[in-house]
Length: 260
Image 1 (spheres, helix red, strand yellow):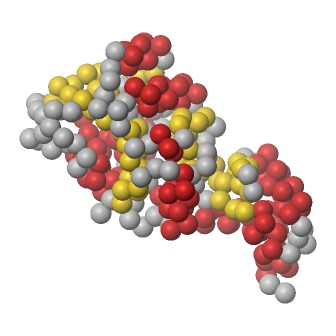
Image 2: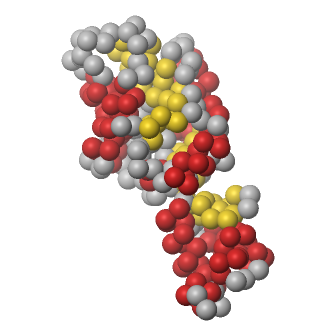
Image 3: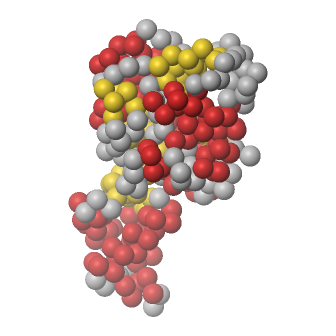
């Protein structure tokens, strides 16, 4: 008898195994779990309901996916995985052309994009992020527009009615969207309702939406949905992204760009 089947006699053993599979792969299939653990799919579905109630996952058709990790504030996250984010940023700025109107949404990866903008590339850049606006200060090749609004102290973004009304007057050629989670089925998500509302409107206003994400956000879910993957024009991922997660993203309909 396999170790997995031996642990399947008790729900606690199955829960531990399912949590580990979610950590490793981001999603699980009820049918595959039932086969590996030697229990019925009804038992697995009951396990997934209990794990979802505990906040360990979000149920989807045929199984479950991991929730996005608890997000720290911007001031802490800006020091995390900076080399990986810089690699994504390098791929992102190669999409830009002289004279474009660019919108940089909030987020620490987008902060790296702001820092990576070429010195000789003239652009108009709008942002609702105070840290990103500060990073753009002094880049004289740029015409910079900063949106006002209600400051979110966790993200450093200006949100709310004022920010949305200012966005109404803009039609960016390209925007770099910030996100907390990306899933082929559930799309792009975030943890705060006001963030999600602004980001949804940004996608609507923008000609081409780009999303650059680190590996830990792939195949995860957040409480608030921003957009389906089919609304994303380019999804930039890391070169060592898990092949299974990459396949899920491709099935979701977003064109992938692998950062080198």
